[in-house]
Image (cartoon, rainbow, N blue to C red; front, side):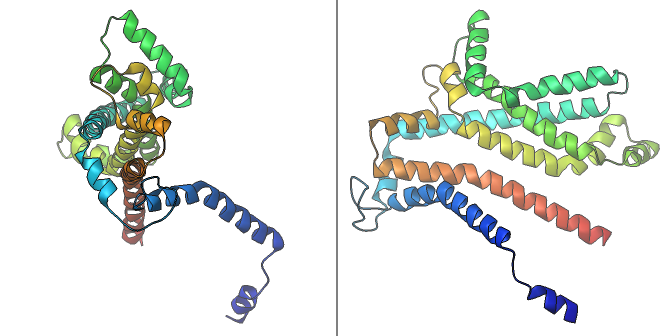
Length: 279
């Protein structure tokens, strides 16, 4: 105990203090503008550059704006559809790659690398290529093309999360279910899916956030009547700053941050439960 007390009183090296100050400066640079934006969404001033009092009227006007509400509905519909498709495709793809006993190792690695390409390709290049592909196939631009485009770069995130979870899967779990009379499909549904559930939920929440926040790919692949909320926000920002835009951005930030926070809390609870069970 005395050694621990002496060690706790040792001075912190200067390099650690410098690193701490640098980290604080980086976080301030990143998040202070966000805090100011959220604060000025409650500002009573019409120009939003000088604090004159607290108000919620900009949020009221925001919900009375039919165009903004339509853009919000479009974003939520697209994000929900993309989340469902990405979750199914990502989970199925990860399971097939995990069970690729019939495929040569090189083929499996090549398939996995090809699936990861949408995560690495610049969004402008992806948007242009998808637009050319839809035009070549004579597919009219609209909700369907936006959902297909978003799913293209969202489902690899689900696949990566589920595949990482599968790396720690004990094969005896599935074998025990099969020995007890379960069919392969039933063993997958009752044993494998519950084991993969934290990764599936994390990937689904990430897909929802990415789709809800996507702008560049959407610009190239959407059509009349399928304008999303990021597009509307960008259009309002070009006109000029306004408290209504601050209120909209605040709600959008909270809407995109909530799934990420939920995924983090879910992962921590799962880790704590595993530690308690193995104790």
